[in-house]
Length: 374
Image 1 (cartoon, rainbow, N blue to C red):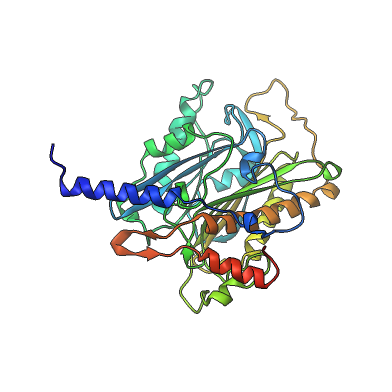
Image 2 (cartoon, rainbow, N blue to C red):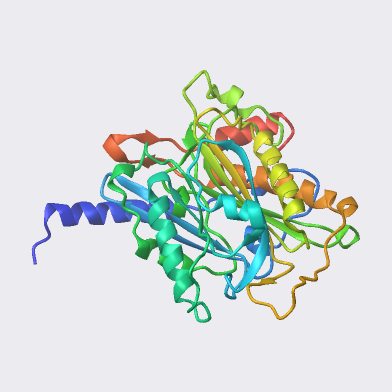
């Protein structure tokens, strides 16, 4: 069969994509950039928290579709039957996150957490409902609370075409796995923009020393916001001449914090607030049009949906011993956001829009001059 012009174009695009993604992507730490004082987990990812899995589906179709789905599962069991303590903190509420009120009221998570684009939230929620109802043991379930967050990728992505389907969401959930998490132009971060550069998915973690409890705090972010970029305290955005109010930089950030520290919903809300401080460290400003949310979950305790007793008994970390987790959340969120920028690559999308990647070599030189890189 003689190849058509469309077939040849597809091959060229695939080859270009292969070349792009075949290039090694260094994380900031490989340039000697450090964030804070606490050690990372072995992967420096949200999946350093035991049992946590992440699945991603990336949609790059034609010239206009640049979006996707990222799913985070706190444990391998049935989340509805074995719920996790959870909390959600709203830093700025210009967003379409669904599932907030029940988490706020009851302090538990009962479904996977899904991230996607703004107009994909209803479809994603419907898919999470399908997934949960189909799980063995949930045959009698008549009410459940899907948690779905979003950012608006309508610059690079033809968001009005609503390309995310239930199958994409279900695939992301079913493909979720432990181990390394891909960053940059993947999943829900495929079409995002951060500080005027290509944003995306980023992740990081902190492993507390045994003297501070030995707990792990992992963070995953979907970066799509503006401000004045700072990296480890260095005013990189100013040096690059690209920042809010000099240019129109706006948007949102979803932050998901998982920990094996035994925290209840009250202290998870406090932990979530500290993640927002990590966003502030990067120069994020939670502008008027920014939807900035933190979803915090503990995997240390399971809350059964059905119990033979009227009492839930669990061990909880005392208030006086929570502070190390707070610092871990701040540092891991800061690093996850910068990781998303270092991993993202230049992208052309809907109506010819083009967003350049962070000029990493120039940034590293700025960091070296400030004494913050090798």
